[in-house]
Image 1 (tube, rainbow, N blue to C red):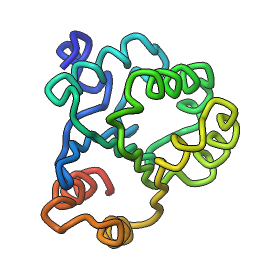
Image 2: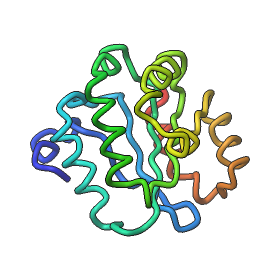
Image 3: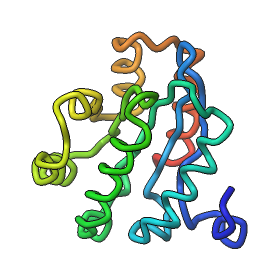
Image 4: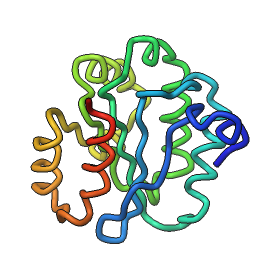
Length: 160
């Protein structure tokens, strides 16, 4: 946990939630997040979260159910994040699962296309729908019930 999150746990959102066939899976939610625009502190938080799995495959679930336009207005932040992920994590970042991104995220991804290479873009998996829809899609992508259970529990607590 970073220093800012020690003071207020809602500052950032990036935590290991499960493993899927040897891939460490991290989860981000916009529900209570406070710092979504200061790239150095967000990067630091991510690096601290990834430190225990350095050199191992990982995936990132970004739950956008509570994403608002104020989160997307930070285009410079998004470009920095994409460049950072491509520069530092291309080798081990397996997939980015975007849950319930809707129109906002689709427009943002199209806007950011000049900064995203084809391989990186193909690693992004969009999943829309209810908890059951998400569970079914993960199952279709090869996830077992045991692997997806921590995600479903998290969604159960957040999707009210």
